[in-house]
Length: 112
Image (cartoon, rainbow, N blue to C red; front, side, top):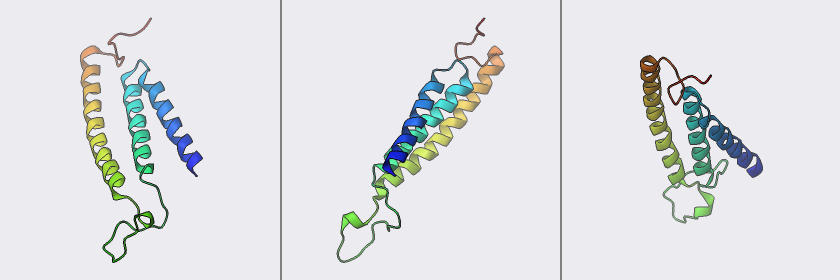
């Protein structure tokens, strides 16, 4: 299970880096999204992903090994919301840049 998750994070991160290095702005935005997904998945899995475990509750004998860590979940949830807002901003800037320059290349000019 850990190998599959590590491989998926690696593929997401590698694809994101490759897309960020592309010349068109939509590909750069998609690469940034993939990078953020890879980082979110990494942070989420560092909180020891457990199946069928309750979050921390108020009980008499608290054994932290039996509960899921809520901090990475809260951090990833916050990062997802911020990622949606920044993606909307990137898309508005992309559309404005396309309208002003007539191209969607990062440097503003078509390659010959």
